Length: 252
Image (cartoon, rainbow, N blue to C red; front, top):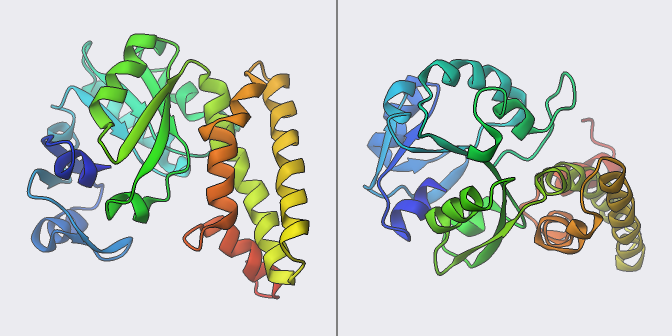
């Protein structure tokens, strides 16, 4: 996201990392050799380990894995200003109580200033400039449109949605289906079996969304069906890969 915002969107971006040594390495090499080797970090991206420096920006994009979001929220809270808007791009649920990421962030920001981003967004493809769509959801239409304009580029098409619950749950639950799809690949059961499994998995996600008050039609869109296709089929999908390797006998 930092790369496309600076390279394709012409934005000035501050990229924060909690590790000072990693921040210095990224700034010097202009490359994240651990996660995105070969992808150049544009000069328009300032890398820092200073959280206060990062939060001088008016808009915040949170890309922290779900396991670390609660601690980050607590660190960020004293530095938030009334004009801040925040968009969570984390796909997952809080490991201790299963809450969605927006539920954590709305404890320190008004719900109308919080958005979530999800969809078929394989990170490497986006970083190297391949076209991709995404969904930005918020209870406030103006906030959703704000982030749509902020992150959208000719190659990264952003759509808006008001179903925050559905978009977040689709982004988390599709990983479970991807594990199973990968296991089918690992066992060599074929494409028919995988198509049936993925389709029934999508129906189960829809029922789960409905039970929690979300719009079950969200699963038919990019945040549901679209993300499920990418995650269950891409060679870059970590969850599909884990399922395939487990089925071949490797330990978790």
